[in-house]
Length: 252
Length: 249
Image 1 (cartoon, rainbow over the protein chains, first blue to last red):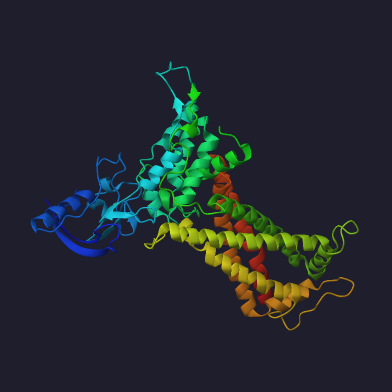
Image 2 (image 1 turned 120 degrees about the horizontal axis):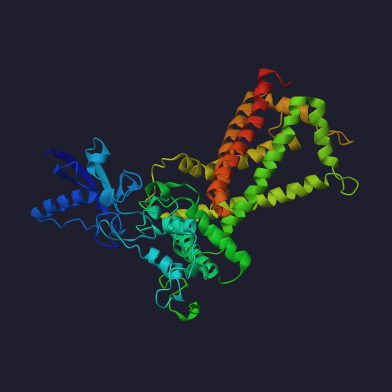
């Protein structure tokens, strides 16, 4: 098995109040099939052997569905491969790299908890504000009870694919969360239960975006990193729902 | 199916408990201010460019158009009435546009925090990062342009002719005198390129701000934006070039 030497410039931060700084480590026996997270695992083994505190980072499923992982690699959230979560970015895809700079997802809304772990609860507050459907749905209805057109169902599902990883926010030079919020709004605006609260949902989500995130200037950086492939239409959906609520002035 | 009263559920459809104070006016409102005033500017710049095309038909054509602009609507509207109405709308729009832009820029910086993005990779990201400096350059140009060709003061060419007492305007001669100075011609061409990128990105952003989510609509919208930007840069920037090479004189 061919091994490669990778120099890693990595962010170290004791806690939220610590200033934090980069430190450099070398993994001598990295392999091309390692994912970014596996490279960090290898580095942590090495650090543990040396009696050094391992680097804290988040991960869970490691197959791109949970949204827990996510680090910034060479200034790109999740890493150099477009639209792919950190756990599914493998060293073989990076070309001839010998040096990586790894830091947390960056945004004022994402305070660092420790090393590469950030607090993304600002996104939870967007979901709290309007990412749910307040309908007592009871038991499962008959299959033909609520008719949803196939195209609507497909589009809603495309937007529902968001895994809430926060890479869009970290990619945005303005720290905006419109892609994330818009995915939720576009999804819920298309389905029967969600439609009933379109007006109040748009209003609540826009308020929450204002409170903790920045404005969208159509940089389009978010769509280049989104592992769920959410399109820029999601951003337009935020404003569509906002304008619709404004002119309609009703809860639905 | 019953909708549970959202107000009775803690946390539901209300800003989260940890939410910071919301800035006023809201980002959404500021973006709409930018969008609406942006539409006014794109409309103005396009109509202005159409008017400028008269330069290709000779001095008579441009001068009579410029004179007509001061008399349009008379006697229902007093002389220069339409012109002044446009000036007021455009000035108010300009102030609103710049105020919203700077406020949003500051909010974006604050929301991003101290660790900035360093390498915007895409065309869209590059034009986006040029919106504010480009916009400031356009603002400077607006002042220079008005001094040069409207007021005939400050940076105006030495041969600038003011309007005759009967309202006849010497737009063509003033334009030729101004663009015969290479620095002014180059400045104008550069600013027209900046304007074109500003329009291209602005129209793309309008589509987002006005909530256009349909795939076909978005494609058409982006193409129209690009076409508008191209039309403005071609229609306008050719004029100083043709003055310099002596085609327009």
